[in-house]
Image 1: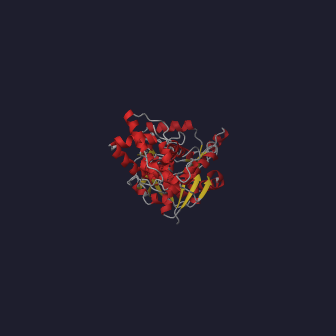
Image 2: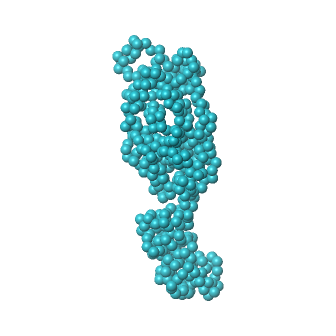
Image 3: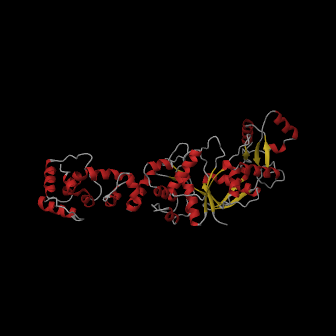
Length: 457
């Protein structure tokens, strides 16, 4: 069977780094196995789901380098789910329940006082025709529960089978269905909860591997039972650990914490985001990969820790700097042009400054220094001012080549006796206005003799 994976967020907000981790795990797994990647929007919640969020999620995925083979929406597939419901009803594993939320809460409390697990006791299976008619006459509409499998001759007893699977990430996993209530698949108003559409779509779309966060481990036990009830072989499941903020808080689309949009707007390179999102919390060293193909070579689902991992945005800038330092001009050219950096000096300028910026947009400040001089005039002592005047008088004539800085500072050293920091710091401050930055040997030819002389204090 061809490897087929899916990423299935609900379009109710912008995706965050934790969602991107799931998308990337699926994409890289498909990449390594020459498989397919399905982008499915679980948008059965019509009230909260919005097309603008679906479009934004696709944009975020494309920015990361993920381009789905198929894009689909659950809101366009209700007929498929309706047919599955009828099959489950006919098989006797989907049953109507009429309890109100208040009645269910009271029953849970009673079970707790008796030392029993607070699961649904399947009372609806014992309803008589008269009782059902009475509920309906009162205007009650049923919700529908999936009858979890069990080995008891009396289905009202909570003695149920265990579900086992070999998890792609976590190894052998077991869910004891005795600890769970029969899940509601269809609400009173006829709308679907997450479980049924997800399983039906995985069957219909030929999903071979379901890779998602480990907050779904318990759901998997229920879903495997539902796959089998629908006559389908369950896919291979893999549950990766979740990411939290540095303070240990969970991530949420509603709060926008560490959203892909915010990281992009902060000037983070997509491969810095992808590298950290995939490799943090694994046995692999966190290093900046040039592209997703390279990252796929370091990706092993089984190398993922079973405990949650903290995502520190500060680490993104470490990776960002590495990526920028390695970025050839051909990759940066168009983006620099948008920032107003172009012309014959653009390439040598980029090669000079790329090792001294946190974000690509930071190059603009250095471009301004190159063209306009220091943005803030530094203060000099009288001795340093006299030194700089003497140094500029020694500036070689043009044409200049790559040795002009070495030649010039050699003359200055001989004439003034200065060396080390006493020589180089006043020159750096005069030329750039800053105490650190790109190599002046690289910047000086770009300033030209006239531009350098214009920096005389």
